[in-house]
Image (cartoon, rainbow, N blue to C red; front, side):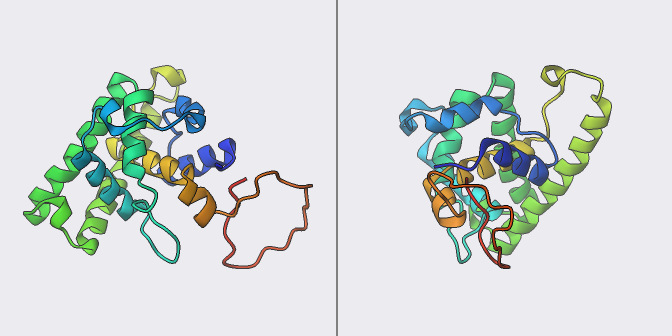
Amino acid sequence: MSMNRRDLLKMIAAATGTAFISSNAMAYVTLPMKSLSQTDFSKDDVAFFNEVGEVIIPRTDTPGAKDANVGLMMAVMVTDCYTPAQRKAFTEGMASIKKLAKSTYGKDFLLLSGEERAALLASLDDEAGVFNKKQELASKDLKDEDKPLPHSFTLIKQLTLFTFFTSEVGANKVLRYVAIPGRYDGDFPYKKGDKAWAT
């Protein structure tokens, strides 16, 4: 029950300013979920990933990242779908969030208020946007496989979006879902505030 693959990749690229780096993860959506013990991460890591994810996709009148337990799927996907260089960038990115929280606010990320968490991740997102634009300009003549990785926060944001919108919660409670789409209707009514379609 997931969003159309092409639309999901476009949405992730638009939200992060760069193409989704682990496209082989798209095949993973249909595979059974592994247990945490089969990953490189701990329960504490998953809890931290969920808290970071909740800042990116907070609960509002619809479920947020924690409701979908994006942290567990992120742990599985980083272990199974990322190259060693991508895994290293992801874990360094998570470590940099913790370090930035200590240096900026003098306390652990998990002890920050919602506003402090949002400000901290917004600053990283801004930094990532500048970094990715410079990388793109510097590597525009390179083949995709030779291009450098995007900013580590971009990897985190991409995985948060991917795992949320491919989860049952994201696909069924945030997006509208039709298991078997009917005929094409180019004049289908859309009201302001309607959910986007998952299929």
